[in-house]
Image 1 (cartoon, one colour):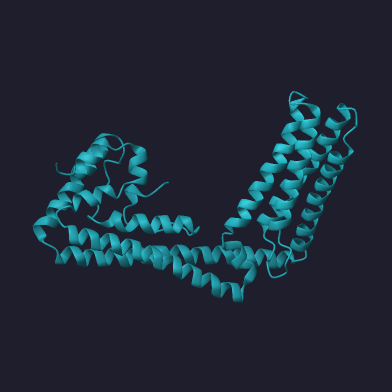
Image 2: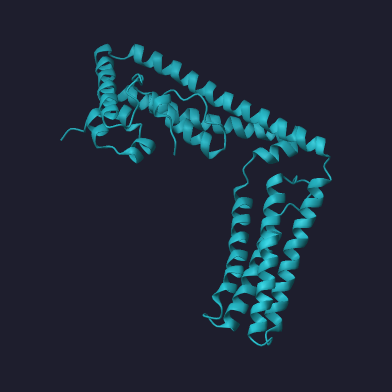
Length: 303
């Protein structure tokens, strides 16, 4: 049984499939040119990896020259996960206050104190203590969000303990110390942040924006280069098969336009462009680079 054509795939695809698997149009359209299809797909993957390496090299140089700017641009996934985990822990501690004793006042007080202690421990691991790690605006903002919620949770825990008759001094002490520690960490982070002159922070923000523009320009340049290589590859391929592939893309566009999934004025793209666009788009988004210069704007990736 033969594979569905690009138009047949477009007939079945919903908006989600079109958003996350749009390269299927090119894979099916280029079924008659398997070597060209595979070479173009490999070009897209290779270019995406090279783009990621270029970004890492650029950030490494930036880290030596402008460490604060590099810290702003470089995603710290472990730190982000830590802030998220700490936020969840203190939110759980605060939420237990609204249990109103339904889970048992003693249990709620103990669980709240444990959650606060976990939140404080996680925050202690992720806040920027070392001078080698610059404090970013995100660090300052997240530390205060967690600190305010943690302080509120500590007070709520003491109130719950009072409802229980005040016989739980240890959990209340743990909750109070955790809440105090969270506020103290937020103060330390803020002090480190404000010690940097405002003019310097503004320059860092402007410089970070400039480097983001540089990243976006590189994404667009890589796409243009790949597009030129695709044009050359199609020029050297069997012209009849290439025309057939172009016809399939045109037919798929007509189907998508009829189904309301594509602007009717959109001009069909050259077969293979989506095989380049998709891996580059994924690489750009995964590394927080501006996803600029799509080869197929009408089907630009949104997810």
